[in-house]
Length: 253
Image (cartoon, rainbow, N blue to C red):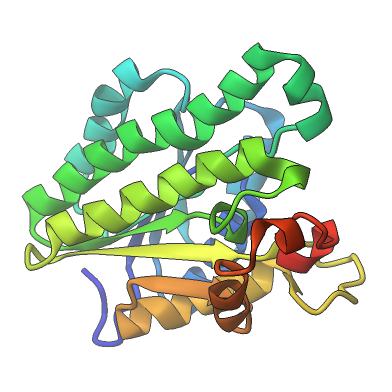
């Protein structure tokens, strides 16, 4: 069960190689998380991620999970929950896509949409039902500032995140009062820890992890990373399209 400060003791990561998810897991392990499930396609990267977390002194198990195989989600996640209660499910998988390539190849665009939206809807509903069945827990959904308003630079990815964001908000409303907490996380452009972040609205996996922990403590429904993106996007949502399309790509993350 979660401690008095809302920090989970057990964690299921859907998208076990996500930099944000792993930064969040490391942070929560330091705070007392003792059991972590990393779900993803079997790979050397997933094994390395698990070993890295084990090095922090926690129990880590790997489960084979494919966002593009929604028919398997109920069975796969059901086995995890059968092992014991999960305090936090972090839905962190997704494809950024390649806008120029995906515009020329519709099937590549469909793969982005199916991963980021359809797969997330399936996994999110299965996880939510399991959390509701145990009577407690949090579902954290990694959305993106790109979903706030479509832009020329990445409208395929952005539209998939817009759908995910709307779904997560609705799911949170549906679960309100059940003991299950749903939180949407909207990061700006994420840069690796080793990269220079000179643009004002970029962030790092570690900074997003910090925002997620704070949001869990506050039981927030939505978290922006950095927080300064919230008023910026509130203004940009109402900017006329003719002006919006002239903005440089880095402006909205």
